[in-house]
Structure formats: structure tokens, C-alpha cells
Length: 124
Image 1 (tube, rainbow, N blue to C red):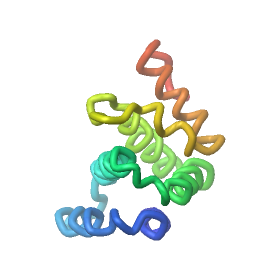
Image 2 (image 1 turned 90 degrees about the vertical axis):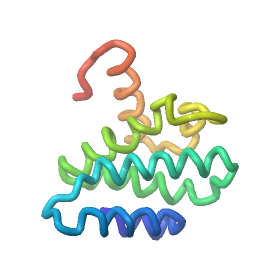
Image 3 (image 1 turned 135 degrees about the horizontal axis):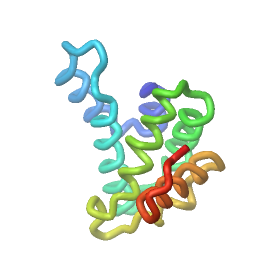
Image 4 (image 1 turned 30 degrees about the vertical axis):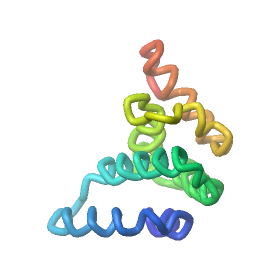
């Protein structure tokens, strides 16, 4: 799941390797934690104006949603998109600043997550 992402955003590799080392003894490491770290990384990149790799990153996110199994799709939506929407993680940016990079399915799921938090409607 992460190798295509690391090719699209190589600056996340060090964090990913630390995550892998920390959870190396686990059969199923908590990928939600790694995706939360990725969200924070992307927010920092956005804040720094370093968005040159975002097209590739969000191409991978779209593939996770469209081509991934249920576990991968859920991780992409709940683990990444939801964290990108978390206004507590933003200082000099806003969640909406990511909208230009969303692809068709990630935009649909972004809206569903937004509606879930605003109105309590299920993500399904």
C-alpha cells in the first residue's frame, strides 16, 4: 500500500521507516497511525507551499479508494482524508486547501466525511 505513496512523496520515507521499525513485531501494524502521520506531513508541506508532489500523492490516494480492498479503502478515507479535514491539525492552512488535489472518488469521500461530521450521516 505504501510503496506507491513513497514513490510519489519520497520525503515521507523517513517517517514511514520509523513507523515500520516501531511496529516491526506486529503482524498487522496500525496503518491508521501511519496515515495520520502522512496527513500531518502533507499539512506541513501545504503550509510550507511545497505542493509540487501533491498530484502524485492524490493519484495514489485515488487508487487506494478505487482499486484497494475494503481495508485499504477505509484506511484511505478514515485514516487520511478525515485527518486532512481535522482543523485542529491546521495552523496556517485550512482543510479546504486540499480540495484542488482531490480526484473524483476522493472528492466524493471527502464530502461524505464532511457530512458525517456536520450532520452525523453514515459514510456508506
